[in-house]
Image (cartoon, rainbow, N blue to C red; front, side, top):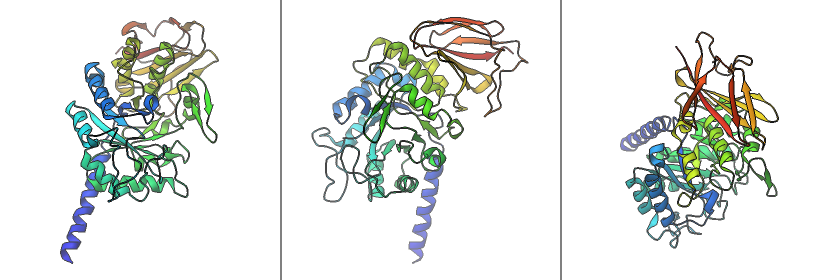
Length: 403
């Protein structure tokens, strides 16, 4: 009896320690790649290994991208005789552990997809009733990231379901970033910080600037519909807990200008930067966009403050994000398809963030302006900003105080 009691104490202590470790993870938004946007369930071990190679060879690892996440469709249609999940033998003949090891050998991290319901969205075995067994298997395989979806979850409480898997991950003993993919239906921003590290705030993204595609009882949304739907959630984001605007569509059919806006806005809004394109065949311009370290630094800023819309008109939106060291990121987005002639007086509409109470300080002589995409200084804020912005493009600046 005494041994059993001591064992329970040790288990409880271990779970508590793992919970504390989890709270120190994802202190900046996770960065990586997910298979779903381009490949759906058409995935295999060759794709994973080639993507890992591309991370290293193309400089994406050096730019900060680290997670390679396999989405729905990696498992067989049935569990085995012990009710364990089984990787599809045709897609992954070497098993999951072998590709996890390959990804780790590249200095990268590996993630998997599962679902809180009886089945995944694509009809594969879900984790309902098998949470602790599945979490133990993930730990044995060495995974670093779990995306947990919300299909086929009739009569399940969302917060409770994600808490169950969270506790299962703690009990398994391996630190795993937990991605809540509940689509915003049950306001996960209000409880997600207790359960995981990031939570989806909408249904699936689609590769367009401003559209919505209906699928019966849900819709896929383009870049700006997602932003406009969830722009008021900034108070819920911060180090270790992020509003997830979904995997990016950069390189998946929009214009290069629109891709620049896409990356800039996801960075300003502190969304995880999860690529969703085919890294093996993307254009040089797409690569130039996604590995821009200046823009990525805005996303990875240690304060973790989400941007807000400072000014808005039919043709121009100005978004502002406080950064560390009293710096600011400011995006001028041309919402029209025609070139925009910009003339902006910094002090006519002073920057003043009502959430953080940070503001552009008049105690400084001025702020220097650094164009993050062009990688050059363009002057000081003591004069009007004069610039031309192409249609559906962005001028993204970092302001630094001249002390």
